[in-house]
Length: 161
Image (cartoon, rainbow, N blue to C red; front, side):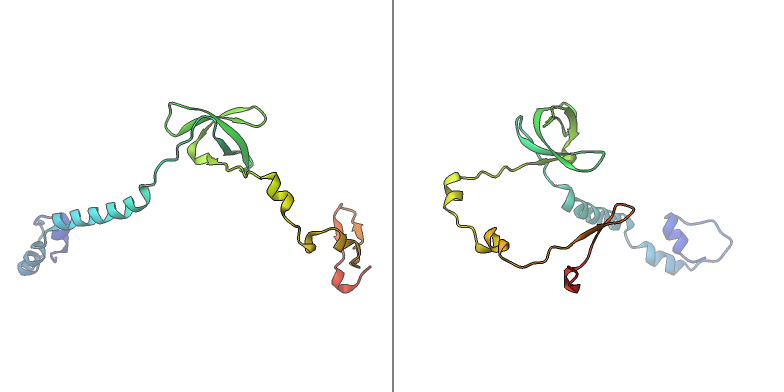
């Protein structure tokens, strides 16, 4: 038996097999405790890289999006209060329903504010004006409905009109 089981168990094993004393003592000189401390510190550093994210705080009246558990869609809502349980908020949806949600399922909502004077002064590019499409000769595809209810749209590139 070599010194590897002795290194694993950190003691001299009782065995009838002969061992090489020099090999075991040479490897036991490595301080295993210091190596273990270094490995733990290295593991802690890698863990702390991603774990130090700050918790998002919401104030009462903040406009937010809430994730619906059933369909995974995000719905508009308003924060009503912060609850005693950690990272939990009482939230009211647009339809009046009040729910308790964790911070994981809440996102801040940014409302865009439009200035009416700026929008009046902006010119619309010609590609977005309706007049350009009225005079164009784009063939309108005819739609066929199958027995199952699916609409078949024939491609324009094959000149089906």
